[in-house]
Length: 526
Image (cartoon, rainbow, N blue to C red; front, side):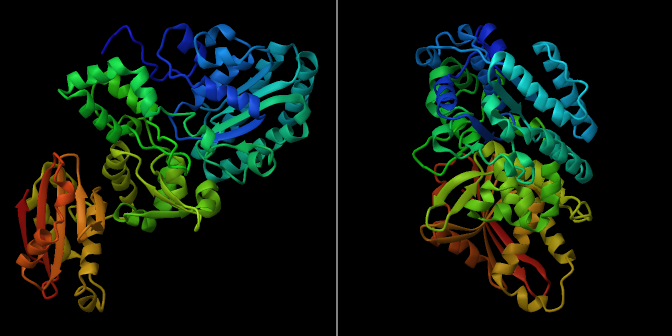
């Protein structure tokens, strides 16, 4: 990598980015569209997607700092560069208790008092103090620009009781926005999720929620064209380091980090996760950077409370969610797909305008493998207390290393040790029941499992994918294993993977209703 080119990894200040020579993907044409076509907005995007940088860009614009925008698109669009008083409130480093949030507001209002020479410390509560600050500053210097970044960060980490207290505080303070509308030039709020029960959304119905607005779908994130234009030397350097052609490197980047879609219109390009993309360029490695920065405790909690739905997730080829559920608060519908979409683990694959339903999928390989190899085993651990006794974890390692005989032997022991309820003899004669039991075990082992995956000539019983291996399973009950392998060949189940560089394993497996475990299995490579 060219050391003279500075990648803005972790840089959230637009001023620092511009004054210290970091590379910048120019989004200022969209910034100009925002500030000239509307007045009050809410935007949700996953963490590490550039919300804070965008917020500080808005701050610099409204402070009239024209020199920071030299050479950017907005320089040719804006002619006035009018300066406004800016109230910028950032919750990204605030704790998750009521005391932490209250202290953050208190310090922030104290700083505003000092900056604008106001004396509001004597007001009886924070809500009245905020209202007084708005009126006093606006009357002195004109309408106010109010920027709130990562508003939901304390809410996402707070316990239930604390969360209610924080909500009440938000309600009392932010509720002022609507009543004091004449004092504001612009209001901007960002977060990961939409907490509908917070008054930001119940009281502030004038907010323009642009989270799925076509015009702003690429406001955060990096498009394919932007990546190739801005980071061409980095692409070439990464390709050289990994001994790939430029086109092969672009294909790998696309599979690993692209694929996020924030609106239903298919003509709108998807975007790359900017954090992971920049990290890949700096380290010249394809890794799961975004996931390694930490997972919200609230996400873990939400998934554990919906463990049954979670177990089904990777086994389904189509994850369907209604339009209302996708854009609402998780706390309102308790659908884990809502949370997984809003926090970036799933993205929009397609939209049915007649049924008003979205089909979701993993955005890319980075999220897919991190989610299934790390998050699911962690979440499901409490729901499977005997996990180690049932040898679930070693199955994951066997799959990753391509040790087919080892994980099939473990699977055989697992099936023989499982408690079977009354009437199971009849149920287990069904190949679909056998298939689902095995898929559940593979899922608990942290594997990406597709059940009944469609091909042009039929459905593959199960497909398990790892970074280095692809496993095709055909299951039979009380039949010769040759029938399973013959079906794989005759139905051409391996054809969709003909161009894949990973090792292909075609596996036939037979369940015996007499012994209640695997009676036979066989593998064919390639």
